[in-house]
Image 1: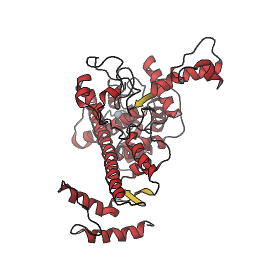
Image 2 (image 1 turned 135 degrees about the horizontal axis):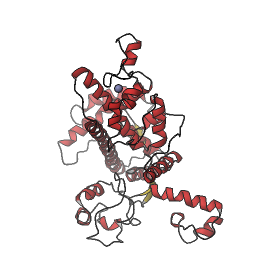
Image 3 (image 1 turned 135 degrees about the vertical axis):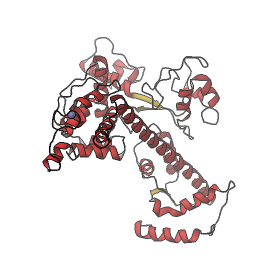
Image 4 (image 1 turned 90 degrees about the horizontal axis):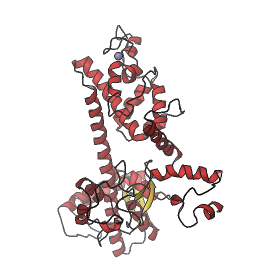
Length: 426
Ligand SMILES: [Zn+2]
């Protein structure tokens, strides 16, 4: 690598300097690296490479950096100093080092029990992998931040994929899908089907109520979009076609802002219905608040669910592994009903998600035991596991049955067997 010899001989590429008299190629790589650096964050492994202050390593925070002032550890302290000898967070030290809110975020970062190394991951995509599209969004939002105004006119062809990719509830996605397909019962649509006498907007009484009018350009709607917390605060709303609005949103907003916009659109529609059916009309500020609250609630539940599932999968993995080792079972099929967990564990690509440490740990175990297979099974196809899980809650000591089981267990095994015989090939 000629570039390496010349420009970053003694350092890694991310810390390289532009240097004197740089070539065109190097100048362009160096330029895009600034963007790359901005989007790269650390996922905690053993914490040896990450500085507590200055480095980006906190999930769920826009800056990803610790903001608490330095008081307990010194400015150069590494994250490993917050980790106890048992490989878990040392809560006392964490609490003494950062404020309560950041301590909570840190202690919720799962730890790898196999001592994985710290990993650089890309913060602007869900799977942690760098993609041109997410970098493009980051670039656009940076430019917007520095100029205060979005650059306009950029269009891209697709639109459905973006919609289904959003981290919002199915209700919200379906709502937008209907809106984009002009399937909402607006006055204009009802008028065309001869259900109402006039197509006019029931709120402003000035223009026909098309989908784009009600969700984007009605003066009452524009008040919502002009609020301070709106992701499209200073946008003009002259579009007459919602598909055009959607293309513009895709081109100019990062995913999380799009999630907010879609959630707001749904609340604008609910407010419109509230006006027609109950003569209630919410203020622009509370439309945004409700949309934000609803979105946060969904995303937090989602996140907790994923973490719980993953943690449960690891625990399941480790207790079954112990049993398999004790009984010297060489071939085993471990079943789980979380399709998402099973999919990432069985994926050959390294998992670069924020909580991927756990997945990499499971992969490590499966790697040592090539004859152990992790398989997905539907919850209905694994009633026995649920039965045993509920049974186990009542006991604190370990109970082991060989070729036998607790009362009620055989009838469930038989039901499961029928189900498995017909569904799977084992
Ligand atoms: Zn209107």
